[in-house]
Length: 452
Image (cartoon, rainbow, N blue to C red; front, side):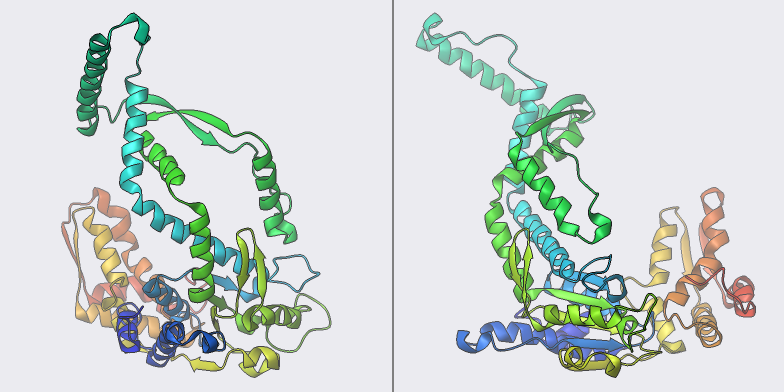
C-alpha cells in the first residue's frame, strides 16, 4: 500500500472505470488515509476514524465496481451486502452482525490461500510421495534385521530406493497421469446442518456442526480418481497440514480490522420514514442495528472477536425517492463524505466499450477468438451502439452501462448462435448492421424482454 499514492490509485481505477473522477478521488484518499494511520504513533492511531463514504447515483454508473477494484488494489478483505436484505433484531431474516462474520470468512480464506502458496512446493512433494506409495506399494514383507546381515539389509534398501527413484522419474514425466487409483482423504464426520439458516441464526448450524465434528473421531473417505486429480487433492490436504491455522486466523483478524472494506448497497431502500405496517416496518430499525457496526463495536465470530472501529464502509444508493438526509442523524454522521456520481452520457458509453481492460467489446472479441473468428467493430458502429444505449436509457428506465450488455447481446445473438457451424473467419460490425439488429429495441417502448 505504501507505493500506492492517491494519484496512482485513481490511475489504476481508471483502467476499469470510465469517468466518476470525484468518486475515484474520494475513495483514493480514504484508502491512503488508512496507510497513513498505521504510520501514526500508537497513542493517536486508535483515535483516527476511517472516512466512510456514501456514493449517490443511478444503477450502472460504477458504484460497486469502484469499491470492488479498490479492495483488489489493496488486497483487502471485501464484501458486498445489500441493506434491504437485513432486518431489525426480532424479525425473521439476517442480522447485521453477519456482515462482519462473512467479512472475516473472506479474510481467513485470503490469508489461508497466501500461506498455501508459500508451502505449495513442499505440499506437492509430499503428495507425490503418497502417490508413489499408492502406485508402487511394497508387496513382499521386508525381512527382519535378524534374518539378514548388515550388508544384505543395506543392499535390499538400496535396491528398493533405486526402484522407487525410477518410478518417481516416470511419475514426474507424467506417464501415470490417466491411471485410475484409489486414495484415502480425511472427510467430515457429520453432515452440514441447514435447519437454522432461514431464521437468521447463520452461525448456529456451523458452530453446532463444528462442536459435534470435534467430538467425533475423524473419518477417512475413499475415492477413485486419476493420478492427475489425486495429486491436486493430496497436495491440498498436505498444504492444510503444513500451514499454521492459528497464525492464519491471527493475521486474518488483523487484516479485517485494519484493511477490511464493506460495501453496503441499496442504502436508500432503508431510508425514509418508517411505515406503520407492511414490509417497510423495520427500515429505521435496520439503520439503528447497522449504526453500532459502522460506529465501532465488538463482533463475536467463530475465529474470535473482531473490532469494527477501523473497517472502511462504502455505502451506495440511487436516492431517487429518498435522500441521504432521510437516514437517521446518527448514521448520517458516520458517513461524512458524500459523492454524487455522474450519469453516463454517449461519450462515456463509447469509452466503456473500448477503454477498460475488461471492456465488453474486448470480451466478445476474445470469446469468438476461441472459434477462430476475428471480430472487428467499426468506430462508427461503436458510436451507434453508444447512441442507442443512451437513447434507450433516456426513454426508459436508466440502467446505466448495463444497457450496453442488452444492446451487444441482441446485436451478436445470431453470430454467437451460428458461428460454431459457420465458415466466416472475419466478421466486421458496421453501423448499418447495428441499426438493423437493434432497431426493435429502440422502437419497442416496453423493453420488458430486454431489461436486465
